Length: 188
Image: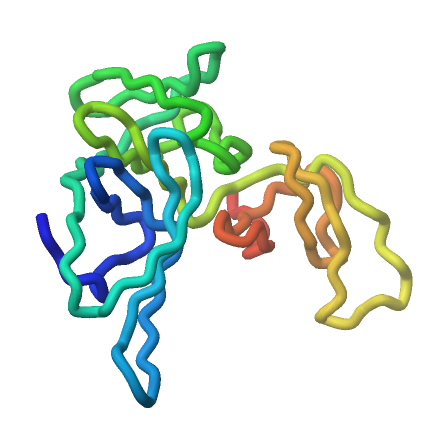
C-alpha cells in the first residue's frame, strides 16, 4: 500500500526494493526555504542493519501489510521466545533479535503486541508500564528530604532504576518501559 512519506510513523513497516524495514524514528522537517522532507531511521528486518533515509514529504513510500495482534508470553528456550494467541491458542516463536532489549520486561503470561508479516514476527511492543520488585537499594541518607533526590535501585528483572528515598528492598513499583523511569509504588 502506497502512502506519502510524511505519514510514516515509528513502528511502521516499509517495503523498499523487496526488503522489509521497521521504522525506529520518523521526523518531518519544514525548512523556511526549500522542500519539506521526512527523515526516517529504520532497521532491516532480515539482518538488523540500520539505515537512514530522507524523502520529500509528498513522495510515495510502500508500506507493507502487517498484522498487529495481542499475544501472551509463555517461555524462552534455545529456539527463541514463545507466545500464544489468547483466542485461538496458536503458538508463535519469536527470534531473540526481534525481542531485543525488551526481554527484561517479559514475565509469564504478559500480554504483548506482536507485528507479523506473512506469519513471521517482525516487531514487538510491551505495555507502557510494568510492575517490578526492588531487590536492592541504597539506604536513605538522613537529611536528604529534597523532593528531587532519587537513589539507584536494582529491580528483580535486572534493570537499574532511580527511585525516591522512601522506596526500599522488597517494594513493588511501576516503571515506564520507554525510559525505565519510576512512575509510582505498586498498588498490589
